[in-house]
Image 1 (cartoon, rainbow, N blue to C red):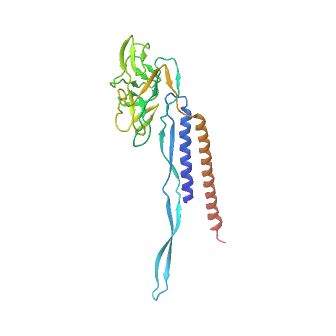
Image 2 (cartoon, rainbow, N blue to C red):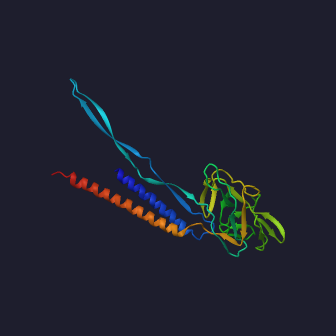
Image 3 (tube, one colour):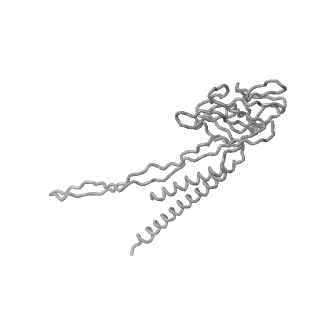
Length: 277
């Protein structure tokens, strides 16, 4: 029965990998989308032993158990986690004044994980909770607040909502918003030293697992540039994703054939070998 479980575990892992790649390809045109990468891991190996019994031919026969080592056996694989790839996406011009692209500059590398940190826009959902996004496809709502297309408020450096009188405003490279030659506020940009500490939440949003992320505004170790009338594109590599999907399909089919072979072997054992003559 171990063969059944090992093959089935491989099929489940590849199925989830295909679902991940499908989601990446579906979001290839979503601004600011960060592609997921799968971390596959094998279950711990088992050491098999054969138990036996040996009898000592003495006046009063004595028996004791013996154990002979057969070897180790793999118990399958599973998808441990999905890890977002925070590589900078391409930047394209849109001409819309409410479109803002966040372009990474100097971002420190985390000493513990060895991963490069990540920068985000700071937004607020309908419950007042702080979330983070790379999607700068903003708009103005009916009250003049700068929001995402889902209606989440974009926050400034003081974590306040940004209200504009019109779409005729300018965003400087450091995030300062100028309207009618008057400085309104400055867009907040959050810095995650360890990008693995943020979790995807859907709609291009991330949440922090360890409280609010610190602001990158005024941080001498972090540099970035905001480009108005531009958008950061998804960092999904469609060609590679399609190749990985075909590879996952083949691995799924290979495990499926192994499962069918085990099924035929057990069918023969039950219906032929175990048949009374």
